[in-house]
Length: 260
Image (cartoon, rainbow, N blue to C red; front, side, top):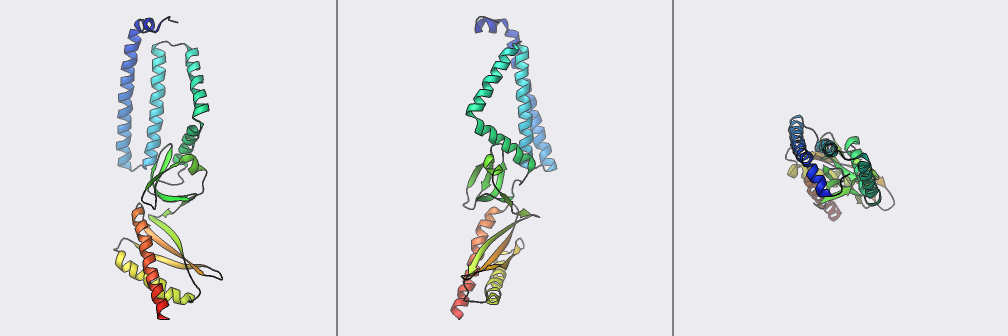
């Protein structure tokens, strides 16, 4: 070993120069590969989360090659490498266990694909449109028109409901009515005309007609399920469509009540 860092650097000047050159080459090659992957991924239509996973793998490989190159150029002893690895492992173990768990969960989400970018999902009590899947977080565009980052450990530990199928967000919500009116009255004078009027005003050839059906009955109310079909990736349309349809339904319900 060398006694002083300065002596070490002077003696290993050529190793330092070669290492810098090698790191520059590795950096350039890494950027070229990533650019190539992005271009090819766009051509063949790869999902963004798949591209994120591939870029992460390339980045990890590049870092490993860079460290290996530096250690080789400087002929660093193995015990130094082992010591650095042990120190890094201890730091990760004591200070970053949650981060590691999150990364592991992120890999699982990326490769198991319980949902994809632009799918509309419920993750536990949270819901929204998936905007990004990264190693650490899944980003949701929520009904409050905000972007929520959900840790992937939470995603992995939650029940996931994917409401996106065959190009549509198939979203359902419940509306309840009193027993003042029969099921046929509610269907023929409230739900059906409200849906027809809504579709006439908002369908515009893009929206599939909503559906409504009786779900349950108890001593207090009749509960109906209202089902919306929104084109995939249009969560903002969903968030404005639901209250609009509800307004049409309540308008016809109030009309029925005043007609008695």
